[in-house]
Length: 382
Ligand SMILES: *Cc1c(COP(=O)(O)O)cnc(C)c1O
Image (cartoon, rainbow, N blue to C red; front, side, top):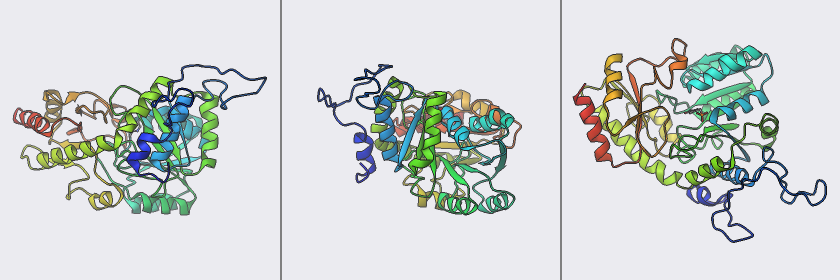
């Protein structure tokens, strides 16, 4: 599949028609165990569901193909994937250099779960390459972890430049590609060693399945995380894996519409007198717009806005009609979120705290006229 274009690989990789019946959609394998032809005589390499499952293999094949990786592993959630990766690669005393605008749960996992086991954490504005230089000069982190665009302020990091610096220092580069999805950005081609996903978001795409994934540039780096996937057991179940595979097949067309709608929403908000600031990498005024344009094929569906004070931001989040007030993002339906008290409540008062006047929109694939009308009535009522 590596010689096919993205949209083709998304539909076909790991999805050969079933050999026994010709079913165009491969069956979902629920069996937890597999008959052996004599002791150790495995038919397809499968023995027990935690160790391997054909539906999970199909998803992992599809994930590796769409991210341009050598190997992918699928997990029960994005955080289960992150946990397996971090515990596989880190020893007590190792340090992680983390961007200061990442998913709150990633910070919580590092600071409150792995921290007590001796993992050290340093936080910088990772979009600022001078700050990265200074951090690397002060000591070599085992892992440099970046989210671009970041959550929720859509900061942009130059992946190619960051990877060159981190590799020169001897660090492993991990990119959380949840916000862009591989349809818009391919971190491995830009130098990343590992791509992390919450497949709960754009890859699943329909807000109906929680999952996570790791994709590796080099299969050798996947060995320890794969052992931990098996030994600690944070695997995705067969139905979850199948729903995610089905979501990925339409990823290319969904991301096109998310990006068109995201741009139109950002342009509308940027021209509205009640809005203090709009955060969207597709706006020419956005810091990092040029870098985003060079490493992304479009700018995605997440738009954040600042309204000047917390009360206005809370009112905004509570008065949309079509945008549903809810956590999460990346589904076909539009959502509104107040990060300070919802998705980012766990980082309140830390160096990752989100400004209190910021609202985050996950712009869905509905008709743009209806989305803009909803935002217009919301702003008029503030
Ligand atoms: C949601 C999210 C995660 C965590 O994934 P879960 O599937 O919720 O465990 C990690 N990174 C980003 C950017 C996310 O949005």
